[in-house]
Length: 533
Image 1 (tube, helix red, strand yellow):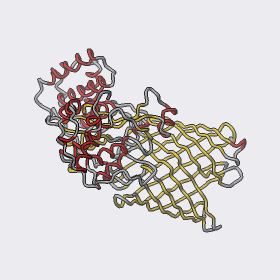
Image 2 (cartoon, rainbow, N blue to C red):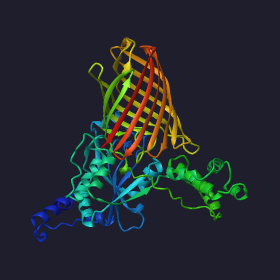
Image 3 (tube, rainbow, N blue to C red):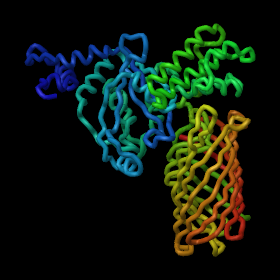
Image 4 (cartoon, helix red, strand yellow):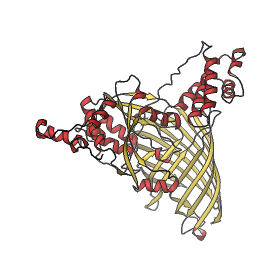
């Protein structure tokens, strides 16, 4: 800052040099670092936590989750603490250009200090993201060392890269500044995934305990799970002002009156936070519901959401698969390597159900019959979000994938094509802990063996993803595509796949598939061992 004494502006370096060189402070020019002292006094650091908001599939920059640091002062409520966040200044840009600039480092990233309650509002209330608070065992001196580093970095930027030098990577530098004895930032891969940085902090012995903060949407779903369908409908009628809260007092058939009003109050607050209600309308409806609620003694004012499995206890982000199978009476061995991150059939422990984020998944096969090696596929990007609709929430399900895939052709052989596929759909929850879904899809293929070197088609896919038990998942999917431009043909197929979790780092898969294209069938069966790391 202009006019600031160098000793105050670079307080971290000054303190380090003074300690290492044994410089007596009295021999140096004096400086009144009033702004720095006010900065430290305002925060009054005592404790800290590494906070991990879970992934949010409908925002590209947040699909892997996020991490930032919470610094606690002398207040009893954590909401009055401060959050240290590293974020890219993207302006109003979005869409493809936003993604491209994020990948190639065209955004400037800054460290920001802001009230913690603002981050809670942003993630748990607005984005429906649960938050995990990994409480750190940093001492007060280590916290001061970290804050001195943050002070020096104010108004200084570095270039933000979505895959490696991202929010989570830059947060690790702050933890290293606080505790120089740990080494968290040495790159071991070409990308940095927020959940992996959480694991790195845990492995370095910096976490003392973990707290769970469910999102507003999670709390609403939990309250709704305690009510029958007709009571949920009553709650929505009150929320929409189609029924008065006072009418519940006269309804002898309604037993869960308190829970109905609690659900309505939560829904009203969420709608207001998402700007679907004006402040005046929200205040009127909310106070009316709470006024009637105060007359009821039964029910609970607080609903304890059971803590799910901690995210860091899920499988590793990378996966190596070794398998063997048969394709139209031809035996083969298969090797797959997926650097990141999670697919629909992987064990669900610590991951959102119905979400798939896959990058650079490579699959190769060896056919013993003719002693040949073949590249079967490379999924450059394969993202699926299966989000069930309900009376309370109506999210959109979507998918997008692109890469290379070996597919049947009109010459009776299989050839590699470049493909891009996308779709929108709907989903609902199944009877078992699982999902039903359907997508309308569009797909394009490019390849020298295709008529006019391309094919463009439309189609539909549908399936179910079920958790048979806590360790056994089943995925059944049917797909039909009609290619209407270029290489005109139809493609019908079905897949039955299952995954059995053996441990946190190992699972078994069995997959059966049948595809009809150009009038011929391709039958494949494969079993594999997955190793997560």
